[in-house]
Amino acid sequence: MKVLVTGAAGFIGSNLVERLLTTEPGIEIVNLDSVNDYYDVSIKEYRLRRLEELAAQHPECKYTFVQGNLADKTLIDKLFAENDFEIVVNLAAQAGVRYSITNPDAYIESNLIGFYNILEACRHSYDNNRRGVQHLVYASSSSVYGSNKKVPYSTDDKVDNPVSLYAATKKSNELLAHAYSKLYNIPSTGLRFFTVYGPAGRPDMAYFGFTNKLRKGETIEIFNYGNCKRDFTFIDDIVEGVQRVMHHAPQRRVGEDGLPEPPYAVYNIGNSDPENLLDFVTILQEELIAAGVLPADYDFEAHKRLVPMQPGDVPTTYADTTALERDLGFKPHTPLRDGIRAFAQWYKEFYG
Image 1 (cartoon, helix red, strand yellow):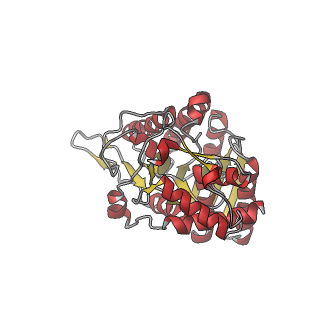
Image 2: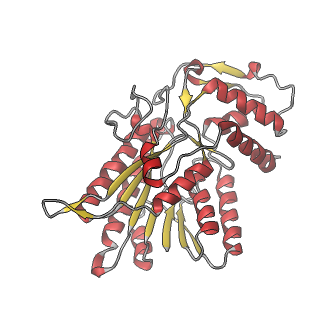
Image 3: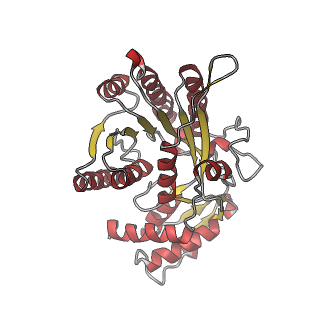
């Protein structure tokens, strides 16, 4: 099996490649990533080093890293021309709700132009009677649900009211993928991830940013005065879900009109157990002390401030994973404390 994973210097991408190298003997993986400086590049370099070391331990697999931008159509077309990818996992994207307010260009370039390049490359992978891409898996986001009042969020819900540009680009990805699945019979699956966390995660996420600030003695801001709930999903659960989806492509079928029915699917991957942010902060501080990141007598109350909701944020995220359980027999299950403990221990080891 030959797989292209874009964004594999990123949090989810690097963990997915680790899992594939250790559980899929003989797999061939091409890892494309721009290694941009949206956050601390040293963490991305750390992930890439781990992948190189792991690939060396599994000589039966083939691993190749290519540094480049998803928006570079020439590069994308060249990669597809030189490789007969069976599966494409597109995780490369500009992430973050708040960053999309101040840096919208990055989202249009990566999430729209970059994704279009992937779709076009998948389309032309069938040229000249080639077998082509058998499954395109791509990252969507729980942000597409916007400020939906109905919880838990179901993939059957209407999601036409995004509250951030980031969410709008992810919904656009789903619409584009559906159109290409219908027009060109490309099996595609979108994955709506819910608040992914864990070791070597993204520093712009709350648990990581809070830890950095507390360690420096700075004050952390808890939005909506702490009245937010998040469906925190541990990274190991996310990558297991992605791997299962990779091997479960939507079936190609012909409709009554004689034309292909779109082989298209969307799943939520979330823990289905939203946690109040104040409870989350309590667990985080307890595990940071236990790991030795912070001293036992740390005064948390002096470093916490409750503030109003930020533009683009939503009060609750909550995944309905019924479809995931039904079709793939899988449900994320890692308790928040276990996941935060793993992060705190990694943080202590990485930063000392």
